[in-house]
Image (tube, rainbow, N blue to C red):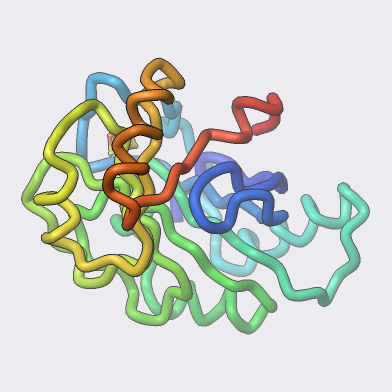
Length: 189
Ligand code: SF4
């Protein structure tokens, strides 16, 4: 697999905010969003076992005990371009609960534990979304949400610039939850 980076931190966004997690950022994306702020171009080719060993190493380095259940976040770029059920199975055997962060353009392996989708432009090929996360810019988020049938709906202010507007929308439409980029607020990765 083409791996951009592997690091251990806290999940900063969505339902799992604050959860210690090993992030596996895969290289490459099938969208070219003008506002993209993720540098995912560089990569190293790694096997699944090399990825799992590096994940364990980042945890050991931080003092986390081996063999404890852990959260893994597979992100990108667009990770659904590369991962498959065998990779998710291998992470499960290594003790990880597996979350994917995807743009919704492609199907994701059925055995993933939690699917977070921040949909970009249609067409959307994803078949299951647990958490829909939309950067709120005053758009019609209800019609987007109706397409995905997610368990949890999250609205995120746009670069912190319209937090009050986002809160007011959520108060008037309480099936949504506020999601903040807390990792940026507390200055961690
Ligand atoms: S889908 Fe996400 S990772 Fe890909 S270009 Fe757009 S913002 Fe960047």
